[in-house]
Length: 253
Image (cartoon, rainbow, N blue to C red; front, top):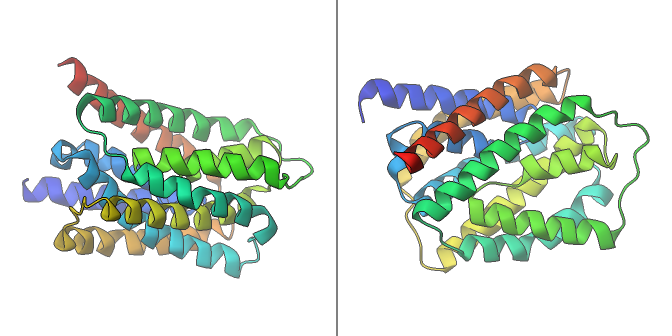
C-alpha cells in the first residue's frame, strides 16, 4: 500500500467516524466501505470484522457518553434490545464466512444500509410507544446475530426499526443505538476470539484509532446537539453504494 492510499484510508475513516457518530452509530458500515475501496479489501473477512468491531467500540462508546450526557438515553427502551442481542452476537461472531459468500452478504448489507439511511428522512416520529419485551427481545436477538456474522454493530438496522415503528425519537434512538452497537461489537469480537480466530494487528488498530477517536468525538458532540441529519445520510448513501459496486465488480471480474 502506498503512503497516499494509506492517508486516503485514514481520512476516510475519520470522515466516517464523524458522520456516523452524529446519529449514535459506531461507523462499521462506513469503515467496511472505506477498507473495501482500498488494498485492505483483499484481507480475509475475519480480519475486516475484528478491526471494524474494535473501531466500533471506540466510536460507539464516545457517542453513548455524549448522548447520555445530553439526556437522550432511555434504559427502558434500550436494555431489552441489548440483553437479547448479546448471546446472538457471540454466536454470529463465531461464524466465519470467506470468499464469495462474505462478498454477497456484504453487498446486500451495504445496499440495504444505504436504503434504510435514505428512508429515514421520510419518517414522522409522532407519539413514541416503547415496545413490549416479547417484541424487542426477538428483534434485538436477530439484529445481534446478523451483526455478528457481517461484522457490524447493528445500529444501522436498529435505528430505522426504532424510528419506523415510532418506538423512539431520533436522538433517543441514537442513544439506544450507541450502547447497542458497543455491546454487540464487544460480544461479536469476543465470540470470534473464543473461536480461536485472532487476527488483530495492534499497529493497525492504533493507527486507525488515532483518527476515529477525533472523528467520533467531533461527530457525537455535534449530533447530541443540533445536527442536521439529512445531509449526513445523503453523503453516507453515496459511499455505501460505491463500496457495494466495488464488491459487485470484484465478483463479476
